[in-house]
Length: 179
Length: 214
Image (tube, rainbow over all chains, first blue to last red; front, top):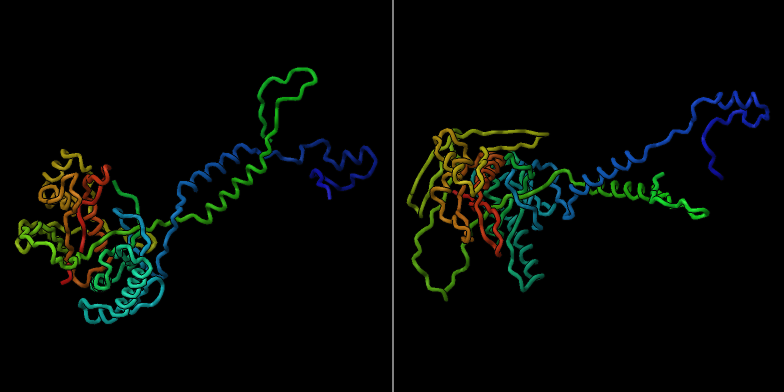
């Protein structure tokens, strides 16, 4: 079906001059409005440039659900490493449950979290089997909720170190430096 | 639609040199690019703060052990709600100790907290700025500024060629919330120095942070 110019259609087929004049609007303003492409393309280019500048090719690891990560200024880029999340009383390793922190909070003293230790140790052994000729980096990233007490953080830190992960990083929201 | 006029074309019977550029595919491309970038856009930038468990390496029976004097280590105690205590220790011997008033600068944005303990505005190479900052009374300095001054006065690894970092040990009580620990580690990492790695001079944190497990 052909595309017609938009405009008035009513009674346009009547072959009388005065009718035609009446129905086409008495020579009034054209119904076709011109669109200024220059400003539209300018806008689109600015949006593309902005989005390209904020684009991250390395991808981002979202924090576990319910974990409110605090912010910090002097940070490093994220790395690919096992992710230990502490959300309230639950501990997750790469999304899988790995114990809870109730016993530590009740006892209020540092202790090893056995379930977490076993999972991390298992991951370490798998890595060593997959990369027999490489040194194990021993890096683990902790996603800890901002209100978790220090005894839980230190217990997790110590458990990770015992399991062969001495390089512990804390995940934070990176914010620009104040100065 | 857009056009390009390259001039000329006045000759008789010659084809006009004005040519129309079809803008539709161009706009389509821009739209598709915007859609892709919007879908893949990341608005919250996740980063990490490094810490080290200081696990000793395996024993080396083939290497002769030498008596090495213990290095100075900065111990930062945040067990009191009123003050921080910064202690330089060599082994078990206390070298210096200084108290810093504790001022928790807490900001909350959509439930996410940020705790700051001051800002070091001096660049590592700006010695005059450091002298002015460290000349002030300790009570008037923030934690970050005091740490920077302490490292300038007592840090062991300050040379550009030195690859090792000074060690900082953080002492907290068991009830301290994690967000305050991050605030203090962030303050410790504000002190930077120049370091040469692979022929390139870069700025690195002056300290390597670990936790005291007591």
